[in-house]
Amino acid sequence: MTMRTILLIACFYLIFFVAIPPFQSNDEPDHFQYIYYLAQGIYPKIPDVGGLVVFDPSVQTVYDIIEVVSNDYHVPNFKKIQKAVSQNIPFSVSDKTKPLTYQAHHPPLYFTAALLFFLPSYKFTQGLIPTYYATRLISSFFFILSVYIAWLIAKILIKNRKTAQYLVAVFAINPVMLKMGVSINPDIASTAIGLATLWFVLSVLQKKIITKKVVLILIGILSCAVYIKFQNIVYLFFSFIFFCTLGVRIHKPKRFALLGIFVVLIVLIIYSPWLLHSFYHYRTFLPSSFVYTFFCTANLPHVSWFRIPFDTLLELRHSFYHFAGFLGWGEPYPFSQFFFTYALFFMVFIFLGAIYVYKTAKNLEWRYMLLYAICVCLFFLAVSFTYKVNRYSCDVQGRYLLAALFPFILLAWKGLCLIRPEKKESYAKALYVFGVWQYFFILCYVLIPRYYV
Amino acid sequence: MITIGYPVNTHKETLSQGFVLTKRCFKVGELGEYLSCLRSQDRIAGSRLIWDLNIKLYSLFPLFNIMFFIAFGMSIVFCLLILIEMQSNKSKEK
Image (cartoon, rainbow over all chains, first blue to last red):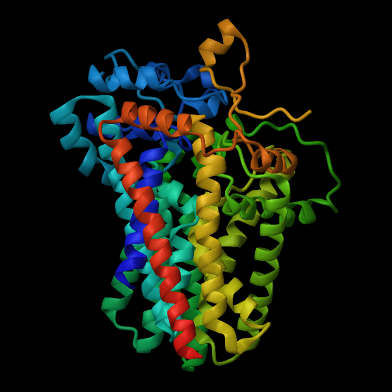
């Protein structure tokens, strides 16, 4: 990538990093609290009661200082924040406090990694705000990693370096990508590890050799993935399909299917302590579903079984609305016409690109990328299906599908190229220019008004 | 009549003083509001907004205001440089 593009992405990132006030992003106070407990050597638990009233008093301290605006749709209290910075107000819990947080439904890897930044800062400053900003740097790391891996994927899939660079930049400067990249949130780590899985599979395809080392590295990546977020279990399915299809291609289907089963089983064995921990404490292997029962209000109207599959599929539109610039969790958003147009065009061109990739036999790497995107979508279609069946008001947010955003952008570009195939670079440029415009539009008309006007 | 603005008070202030919307034309909740903002003389280019932003960013963390404005300025410079580069490549291709 050219230095100018890297610097542009860095500037865009820095603006979001500075402009989004502390603890305003999705579930950040809870994520921060999770890291705090780990720093104290305590593994937190999920409260067994629903509702915000059972928030830990330590989180209440955060709410008192920062006034997390996403909960009440008001501007942050900058006077209180300034006071917290100048007086270096600490963050601590009393000995009597039970280590409870709803975010304990997430596996611990992202939060453990965040200790690398949390611990030194907490030890030397003790202040809530400096420690918070230092902890954010773990997400900066995963943001950079995601963009770098996206670049590696683009280099495999696209011969023209300039085109590849434009499309990676579109991914990097998407408002949801940037927001997750500055938030204390495992979604950005999930994105990095998802893209790493895809890149690894594509590079193995190029080398056409599967050695013990390859299998071990894949097991390592997948184990990290499932310990970051449960949703990443979908990459086990992706890897299994990869082994099966590769086996068919090189006429060793049984051997490779067995290898796929072996990889999946080993990762599940590595993941079993977490699953057993969940079952022991919450009587379920999926503590996320346990938490959803608290936060997703079952207030949707009853619909017929015939309609549920259509509603489930339609639910994915929310993710595309988010990619348009709805930053999520109590944030405002641009006018509905912008959303509708963005989501419609994006989805149509992704669909056209997907059909083209599926039909074109020479695009083997592209087909695996399509398979990866489908696997991520299938997981969230299943999640959406459970929402609809239980009449939950929750939706599938853009951040959940962030790991598929780069493949979506590549597919949309492929779809655009069907209009005039000789203009491939021009379409990538057009997407890039639109991405830059979208960034400034969302910054000036959504983000700054949200917190500062 | 289009009402423009976000709630400017914090939650506690709203409870005691009532709901107050900012008068600054900045909101784009609906297309009509957005167009009204663009046409209005009170649009975002007001110097008061830049000053407010400066003060609030500084209160978030020391030097955040300087970092924000430098990054904002630099991003515009890089955007222009990249656009010029794109144009020059286009003319070379012709």
